[in-house]
Amino acid sequence: MKQQLKVAVIGVGHLGKHHVEHFYSLKNIALVGVYDIDKARAEKISDKYDITCFSTIDELLKSVDAVSIVTPTEEHKKVAIRCIKNKKHVFIEKPITSTVVDADQLINLAEKNKTIIQIGHIERLNPAILPLKEYSINPRFIEVQRLAPYMERGSDVPVVLDLMIHDIDLILTFISSPIKDIEATGISIMTKSIDIANARITFKNGAVANLTSSRVAKDRVRKMKIFQQDLYITVDLLMSLTEVYRAVDNNKNNPKTIMSAPLESNGRNRQILYEKPSIIKQDALKMELTNFVNSIKGVEKPIVDGKAGRNALELAIKIQDKILEGFKI
Ligand code: NAD
Image (cartoon, rainbow, N blue to C red; front, side):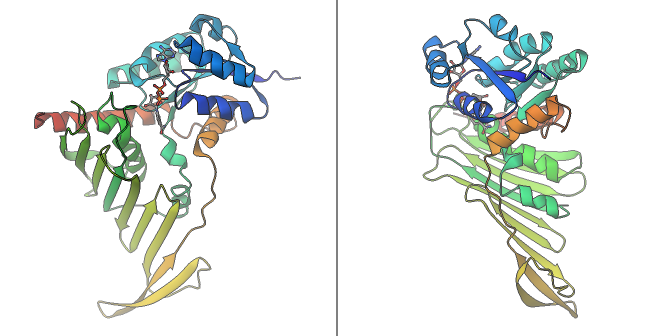
């Protein structure tokens, strides 16, 4: 009988404990244990799931095939290098690392050691984003807003690396063109770092993305609007709502159409079709980790590989640098 894949979680704080919960629920793998520099925290989790609380990373690495690294970002590189050098597959929470040089080092090391490296850009699997696969996306303009109430957790990194990077990763999947220009501005409100940021990214193909992220907001907002020839899509990533408006020459009785309205355009009789793709509510983190396991087994490819994580980080850092050019506390 084939041996079960053995996994462990390194870093069991706010997000790491959800990694544990989902790995525990997955069939055909064995969640072996956890490690955290906060021993009491690790013990609490290991007791709850009746798994091993490892005293060192080296001890953990002797017992597993793969790990989730859910430590603070500045620890990702150090921890991942040890795992990859020991030929373990790694799932690293976003952002991949703090610098592009570090990300490249991890990617090269993983290639050399033939290990999988997957990054936790979870919005790729947001139930409201998944239906966009059904459409041919070629945006001319994207507008994104991501707002969150202030929390101490995550505020150790600028808002671009904490929140905006989610949307940076998404727009890079929608617009496949090199970047021509970046304008960006940001201010600090609660921390000495940037708490509110706005970036306008112009791509060589003429597409523009305007991203706003704030961690000083009353309510949480995560909205994306995509505009392209004859197509307008609004996505509410928080409320799991996707709405599509399409301009067509005639209604081809598309069963997905809910409403249509006449549109007079340059003497052409056209219609606007309104569609609301059905949303399948699934836990995005569980899907990500399932994809990681299946990638190790060779039956899928990582949805977000190291290169994609690196590219999102590279653009985030360029935006961050641009903001810093004009930043005053
Ligand atoms: P957290 O501070 O709640 O937890 C981090 C844990 O790592 C703590 O328990 C800490 O003791 C432990 N730790 C620190 N250094 C360690 C080391 N060297 N070895 C082992 N354990 C160590 O942080 P969090 O909010 O869970 O964030 C963790 C990571 O997840 C960050 O990279 C963050 O950016 C990312 N994150 C991603 C999302 C997402 O939407 N994908 C959301 C939140 C956080």
